[in-house]
Structure formats: C-alpha cells, structure tokens
Amino acid sequence: MKCPQCAYVIPDEVKSCLNCGYSSNSPDKTVEERNSLFYEFAHFVDMVPRVERSVEPKFRNILSRVFRRHSELEAERLFIVGTALTTPKIREVKETWPKPWLFARVFLFALIAYLGLYVGVSLFQNVNFIPGLIIVGAFAVPFTTLIFFWEMNAPQNIAIYRIIYVVFIGGILSMLVALVFFDILKNNINPITIGIAEELAKAVTVIYFVRKLKYRYILNGLLLGAAVGAGFAAFETAGYALRGLISGSYHTLYTTILWRSLLAPGGHVAWAALTGAAFCMIQGDKHFELNMLIKPKFLRIFILAILMHALWDTPLPGIFPFGQLILMAASWILVFRMMRKGLKEISEKKWRFTYNPFEPSKI
Image 1 (tube, rainbow, N blue to C red):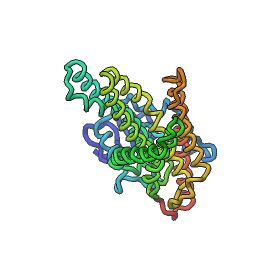
Image 2 (cartoon, rainbow, N blue to C red; image 1 turned 60 degrees about the vertical axis):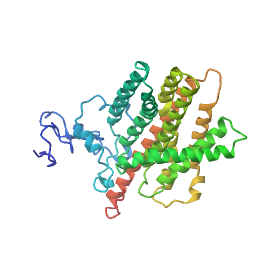
Image 3 (cartoon, rainbow, N blue to C red; image 1 turned 90 degrees about the vertical axis):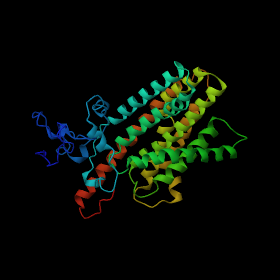
Image 4 (cartoon, rainbow, N blue to C red; image 1 turned 180 degrees about the vertical axis):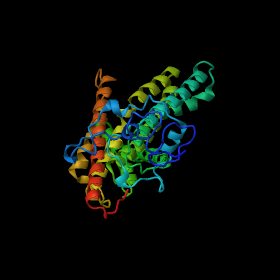
C-alpha cells in the first residue's frame, strides 16, 4: 500500500513507512517523532529562530533506537545510501543528531561468531578455528565502531562498499607507510616517535582518500578517517594476537584480543577520524593544497592525536588500563564535538541554500 503522508510504497510486512515514518497504528504520534532511518527532527526545529537552535548531543536520544525492533528492510535500505541515485541533496539532509542502531546489531553478530570460534578452539581444540578467531576478534569492535560513524554521517554520500574499500586498502597502506617512517626512525624509537610515525602514516592515507571534493564535509572526514583507523587497528590487533599465540599461549591470545578490542574505539579509530575531520574542516570546498596542512585548525587536532597516542604507549607504572580509558573518554569527547561541528556545517549550508536557491547544491 501507499503511505498517506508521502505516497511511498510500503511493503506488506512493514507496519510503518520507511520514508517518513508514518504509522496508522500510532495516531497519537507526530510524523517528526516517527521519522525513518537515521534522523528525527526536534519539535521546535522549524519554529525556533536559527540563531537559537542547538545541535548539542543528547546521548539518550542518540542511542534511543538501539533497543527498538527493526525490520530487515530497514537494514537493507541503510546499505543502499551513498550511491549516485540515493545520495540526497544538501537541502534534503537533516542537521539534527542521527540515531544509529545498526552498529549494535553488527557487534552482536560479530560477538556470536567470535564465541562460536572460541568454542571450536577452547572446547574442541581444533586449530582450524584459530585464523577465524583472530580475524573476527580483531575486526569486531573496530568495524562496529566504524558502522557507528557511518550511521552518523548525515550527508549519506558515502556508500558502504566504499567504506569497506577504505578499511582494507587504507588500513594496509597506512601500515606500510608507518613501516617506512619506523625504518627512518629506527635508531630513535620511543612513545613519541611511535605516535608521530603511526599518526602521520594514517594522516597521509586519510588525506589521500578525503582530498576529493566529493567528500567535503566534516562528517565525511570523520567517517573516512575512522575507516582508515579501523583497518589499521584491526590488522595491528591480528598481528599482536598471532605473536601472542606463537610466543605465549591461548591465554595470551585471548587477553590480547580482549584488551585491544575493548580499547580500540578510543585509539586508532578515533584519532584517525579526528584527523580526517580536521582536514575536511580546513579544506572545505577548495581543492587540495599542501599549505592546508600547516593551518592551525588542522595542526592542533593532528598534534593532539599524536600526543594522545604517545601517552597511550607510555609505559608508566599503573597506567594500564585506567590511563587508556581516560584517553578513550577524551578522544570521544573530541569526536562528539567534531560531530556537532559537522551538523552545524550542514545547517549553515542549508541556510545559505535557503537564501540563495540558485546556488548549486553539491554533495
């Protein structure tokens, strides 16, 4: 049947419209409260003067859809965004905080797969399960975090296949570039030089992917940076897990995967995301130029990422894991601040389009 609000064709097994959220079973709710997929407008968005509007994060609202039931069609529709046919114009993008939910399902699926592999190794002593255990254990949390960034990408202009491409190619490329820097610094390896080498390697890789004008938004930089960081973190964890197994025991393998997975969201993923967002913030609608890399707005974030990385690796007595947890919290405070800047950027571009409707609405 067709939705009475927007004329979207609703499949028989779905109770509410996938386009506007209308549901005949919930007549007491407004369309804004039932909005589809990522976004819901606050009731006052179109009534409050723009200078007084706020996109401050309300964390309870951001995660409000995690525990709701979602149909397979909703998930399928999420995965088609970002193509030439499904990328919305800037005037159609909603600048309020998205409400992601798919990332939680991805984590649940990965956890179930990991537990199955764990049983195969620990209970049945079958070594054929070990490669799968390492791969799933290494990728589960970084990829889950990446899906969260993907759902928070309000412009919806990057397809999931492109993200997977950046995870693998960007992750491998950044690790190879890091090896080059480590070879240059081989006589002076310490937490600071490690932070410089790895963050610079990820920055070079992230800038390579986000330099195109197609990815002009701060939220795009966050997403593509997180993709590079997720690949780097997953491949690094897999390597450490294998080394732990070879040099230690199954216990070393399990603890390596466990701790590195728990701390992954606040490490490489967050730092690379911040670098990507900082670069998009200074690039804007301009073509890439090398002098952009020395602008204070970019350097501040990039140097901060290096310092957090250096502190993360500093072997101070008693720092593990409490020091890393504090740094993780600090990283995500910065990430949410960048997300807020990204949403404000969307709002400003929509505002300009309102007063200059003949300006091209690129995305």
